Image (cartoon, rainbow, N blue to C red; front, side, top):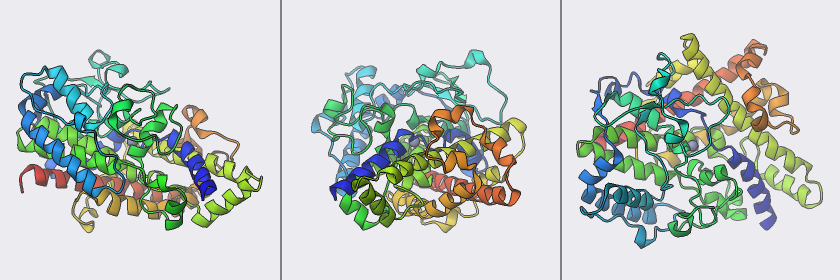
Length: 449
Ligand SMILES: [Zn+2]
């Protein structure tokens, strides 16, 4: 059993090393929401700093965060309780900075997170004036990646802004360092007091590994996997969805619409991550029996298959994300929609799912996404150049910025490419439907109904 755990740990080490998912959530979120009446017909909202919301709603935030803690302790299968000393306490005499810090530490997110006032522009709109842009480091505490498409347009308190832009921008924000270095063995000051245990999987020395357990959820693996490797259950996206989703409802109820949309966007991120099958499955396309068999071989001194599987999982994960991101970006640059934009926007399937609930991300989103993993893998392997998805000697992550997958696929057999596009379109259709269902749920509780 211990050895099975070790192969799973190794698998996760690589899966986790590139745990960003859906490279830029805002591109897809703009399309998913632009025609939803609740957004399309919404009045602009007034920008306000986080400090202003917290000051005005201090007592309500205190009560809500206490309820969130009891919810998490009673509802989540895995939840290290929050130390009592971190509870948020209303204190009208404290400074704005002290209140903000207390709030972030009560949520147990990285206290150096920026929560800047900014927008990511819709890729379909005109390029922003460079003079209006914030530095990457003013918004995101993580290093800027090569060829980054992130653009942060500065906002200031009192500006009037479209809810769609607030929501879409915030849906990418949890990848800007909010969940980095929170575990007890993480190299940060706050890790020592947050009360999370040691990083359940991955390498604690690699900062990007430390956010993975918040952005992935392996809820639908075979029982034998949980028996062999209980750490597979140690993920927390449901916590983040609940925290930000209920904060959004509070902000709407109390007349802070800007923060209503902003917190909704933050909650969305985690649901959207789980629509990526490589975030909802340990090893898509591989049976538990195969995982265990490969591990037995490794134990007998033949580790080749195990090592190869680790690389292939990572490469396929990254190739899928690269392709969808390129497709969305290219469509915007050429102002020509593909089936992906249409699927993101289509509300046809929204009502076919159960209504939003605290466990929707696990019971609906992740279940569906996990079930799609093997078909997705089969199609990826059949369609993308073998060098990228079937060659364990190739590291997609290292070479990614120089790869143009869309151009490569234009050379592919058109039937195969169509089948792959249908798969990607289905995944992004799910992304759109579940995103809107979350917002419906938040708006409903935000209106007190
Ligand atoms: Zn993420």
